[in-house]
Image (cartoon, rainbow, N blue to C red; front, top):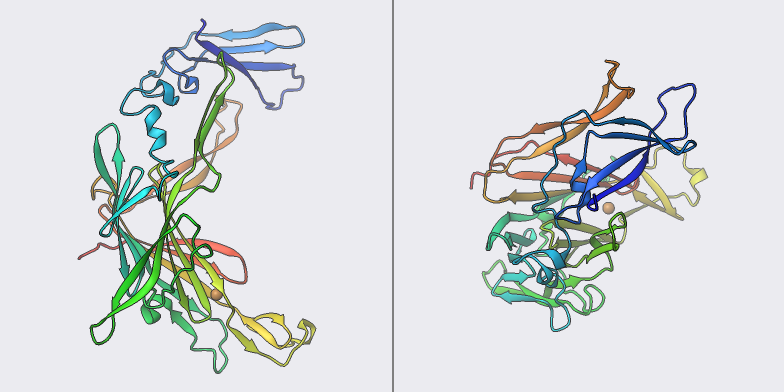
Length: 389
Ligand SMILES: [Cu+2]
């Protein structure tokens, strides 16, 4: 019994005329683990009337299955090798040097290993990204190849001089070709390491872009994972700080500056982001005040005689994921509401998840759309197609 911990939960209201000051008691079995929430003692129903201070309902005639304690421990101090106290240090190396190593174009940091390339068209390419599995003692592939494959920017002014303004910032200008030298301390933090980029010009001669890429550890003060357990004796508090490795490049395409970030996290996830900054492409107009606009302006009056023209930025990603090999598929989940009218339970509706699986072995192209003037994000997933190369 000393390993059993219980707490009270509210019982809800399902239309009863007279309800009591009653609570339900849920119990857990903490034997062999501190993760008691993974060992619920299900199917024992205990209701307590708090006005009368007595158990008002008790039912234990159901068969109870108790999930095993193995593999549920989260306290580093209680984990066996190769997990255990040292695991945390792998992600927080920072005191001496950059915390990662660079051999040729291979980056090793914490439990990650990946190849970094600089391409004339798409800029940074992350490939062969693998994460070290401490239990299996080997690297496991996560991403075969990933990059921003294209940006499509159609402006929405059909008038003369503007109707043809639809840009492919990668294909027409080239993210690598428009990469600009990164400024230490401003474009990248003090702990960043810079890498020069080399491309071939039209005569085949090498052209150098100094500080084209930077790599740095990000300690943003965030929490990767935490839990406090106060229902067990001697409060447990486990916290892992979020530390990640960022690869950054900036492409200045005309008036726009794109900040391309690839962020690798010790949890095994990869976060990619494109930051949009720079200056606006504007159209001069005769108006000085929005009240003077009578016909369609195809934009927003942002200053006297100045319209910021409506447009989108469609950001396309090439993501060839190889999570533990190439037998991957993409599953899209939707929430579906279900009505529950069988009378077996007081609960009348709930939602469930419907999953749709795409073809296996696919290459995904994601498309992020950012509508500049509506602060509105959408994610579209193109019909998957096989990578034939
Ligand atoms: Cu824009």
